[in-house]
Amino acid sequence: MLKITQTDLLSFQEKIRNDPVFFAETILKVPLWEKEREIMLAVRDNQEVAIRSCHASGKTFTAACIVHWWLLSWENSIVITTAPTFRQVKEILWREVRNAAMGKSIYQKDTILDTAINIGERWFALGLSTDRPDQFQGFHSPHLMVVVDEASGIEPIIEESIDGLTPEKIVRIGNPLKNTGRFAESFKNQNTAKMHISAFDTPNVRAGKIIIPGLITKEDVERIRQHYGEDSDVYRVKVLGDFPLADVSSFISINEVAKAMEREVEVNEHWEKKLGVDPARFGDDRTGIIIRQMEKILKKIAFSNMDTMQIAGQILNIAKEAKILPQNINIDIIGIGAGIVDRLREQGWNVNGVNVAEKADDSERYINKRAELYVLLKEWLSTGQLLKDDDFYELANMKYKFNSKGQMQMESKEDMKKRGLSSPDIADALMLTFAGRGIVTMASASSPISPYYGDSDIRY
Image (cartoon, rainbow, N blue to C red; front, side, top):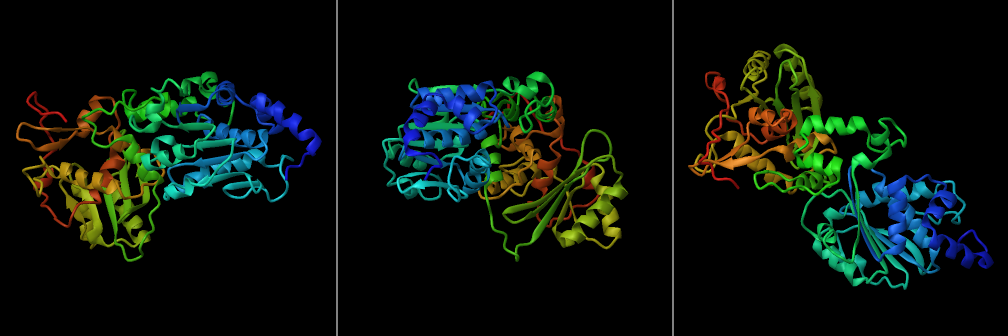
């Protein structure tokens, strides 16, 4: 039971029910910034609320406060929370739920569990995963609230199950990762209270210094702008809190990347490891190295300002430590890569030199091997697990086209730089892990990538 007398319970509940900001700042003793206060008042005053936000705006923390507020506002109330994966439920939203109540005398001991708050038999909050829609059945209360975190990633069948609960209130929050689905539709629904948080609304960015630790900063915004460009979907979603444009020429969506980051894949010890290397010598470009074990990325390494001998030494050290066979090491040999491959072979490591500008195996469909390998990468993204590392959002920056012969081609690094974007070093390193054995001669390694982007191209 609650640590409050029955005599005081009704007046306490009425007070906090009418003033969720008072509850958060006085009972939970957490300071709220302007948008967080607005969110709590919007939830109080509306049946359905949708909040689209930039990265690290405090939206999930606010949702945690809402869970406690609703649960303590009504006797025998129920809060059901969910997110696209159980890891997100437990480690993101419910970590905030637990932290918000830590050290506060509002519950009896052992009331809060990893993904549950149990006050009574019919008075509780619960975090559910989305792998079984039937889990959402059987919850009944006149005061039932549903909180959906990272709502862009919720599948339609789960949304249908949530509808079946007929909640008194429903709150959807998240980064606007895709412009289709229930979350996106919520912002066109007249019956939904809509809120938007841009990085430029947040205290740290507005002040140009750390006001609230953990929120997005001016430096974060600048880093994303420089790496992905202001016209990119990554910038739109993570900085502006806007839905992606879904440019028809974009090859991989930001949502595909985000889902792969959240996916959890069990590694089979018998799976071979592949190592992809996109080398760069000096300047702004980085040498990107990726270790992939079938469906899972194990490691990303990036460094700059090393010569060919130093890069070769780094590759050897990484391969030995990860126990990767020479035949599973794929290195782009356009540019300085040829010298790195030569050096490694001198050391007895018969690694693969991959010329991504050469003819594709399926040359009717792809203009070169780079396009063919990126298709394999895109297919892998539907089941594979990426590291939670912003560098992988490079994948969402890349465009593709078809030439007059109907051959698919990926945007070149040079053309990406013309758009003001960084070289996709990590994306290309990942792409190289899908190359086969095919050792090419050093003579063919000198031909640069020069895809044709003529007026006759057919755009998808």
